[in-house]
Picture (tube, one colour):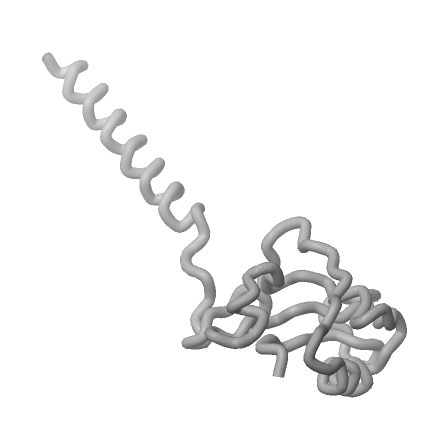
Amino acid sequence: GLGFNIVGGTDQQYISNDSSIYVSRIKKDGAAYLDGRLQEGDKILAVNGRDLKDLRHKDAVELFRNAGYDVSLKIQRRLQPQNGPVGHRDDGESGGLPLAAFLVPGLALAAAAVWILLRYRQRM
């Protein structure tokens, strides 16, 4: 295979009101991984010049399976990281904790430290 999985299609929309085909996973050591240009979350617009617009998921999969040895993809890079299947790692875990998971407790701790320092200074 080409070394990646796809989601989307007219019958299995990955994003509401968008029947486009997206790369959901790059398989480690597969052709796409070794090439290095395709990224998870990329929208695939065409395969070997064939437009993927308005295709069912299984029809898009069939196009990829029959693409041949030399494959040309027309893609659109994702604008920003998305939640959901896109960005999942091989072990099925998500890409890590959001930044807020560190900032919120850190800011709360800093605010408490400032409050304690001010209270301590008032008693002196």
